[in-house]
Length: 428
Image (cartoon, rainbow, N blue to C red; front, side, top):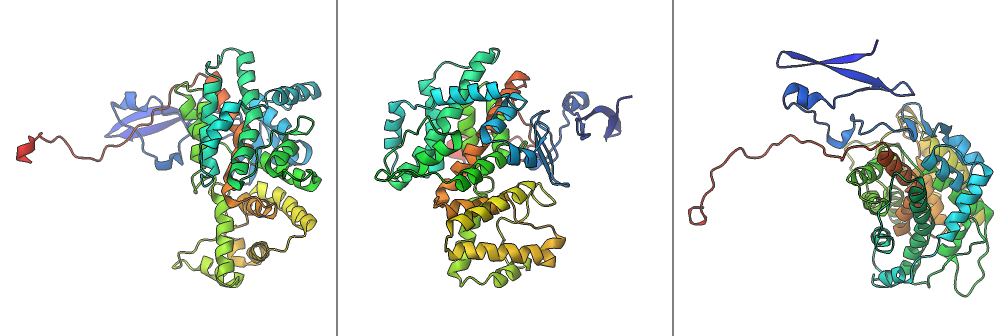
């Protein structure tokens, strides 16, 4: 017998079905609420208790620290797969066969060129432009070079659109960085893997040969995997709601980039480094700042610790901590800011206040450390996040269109003035 929930409003009772997810999550289906009750709706600022969709892409259990893409644990994917394999699984539902992965890789390489006119658009930005603004604009500009809308009923059309954005996005991300740094644009090398080619486009100096570093490639590959999707967060929900109007893939991704740009979302790893630099400027006393963090009357907040969703250790942080240690060990960097980070990490892991509240270092803490160690400027931290999140955005957009979800149209509770008589200008 199916379960139901009973809601009583003004003495009248209404029953609504309860749906159950594959991981036994329960949700009250209230889509008929307003019609059944004659106009009653719900209010849930931030949608913290509202499921906007049913999705088969990512399962997240914050209480137990579980993250799975398409049923595969994040631990297995980070250890055994590369970023393109994970991207394929997220988008199409299963890990690829050897033949599918080879085709996906080759098709992406075939579309990795960017029209020269896009370069001219980039030239119009000042060097001071934030890379996220540049990236969002260039992604949106791709629509002009691919004006035909995607036929979502055609798997071939859908596949070609996916391959194009997967191919061109790393180029645009690297170009946004090189523009900021005043370096000539690099067009990449088809003989390299997806992540290695991206790193070459980012870092190759015009007067030097590019030398790969497997530890760095591995760390970035893992970071991209860990950021690839995270259920219905702000930017992902933005991609889905923009796409629900039947806006195209590139336009929807561009909207997602803008949502990710916000400091409460994708800017968290940048905030970590800015906090560490502020501590350094104040003398570098980590114990002082741990005390400030525990003082509820102090406005200071320890960035990169704890998580809005995970009430336990962020499973992604466990994985990337190892990569961060490997990168710092390999590069042998002497950086007082990174020393402060390691000091805060050790104190938080041992301090009973943080242990009791499960305020552990999260993925933003370790990703910020890695990016700084590689010499990536803080303004580029969020574009790096966007590159990782790209396959998740694509998967969510594709799922939403294939499920033929209705256009997003939230309700509100009006709290403004009631009816007022209009007064002529001379009478006001």
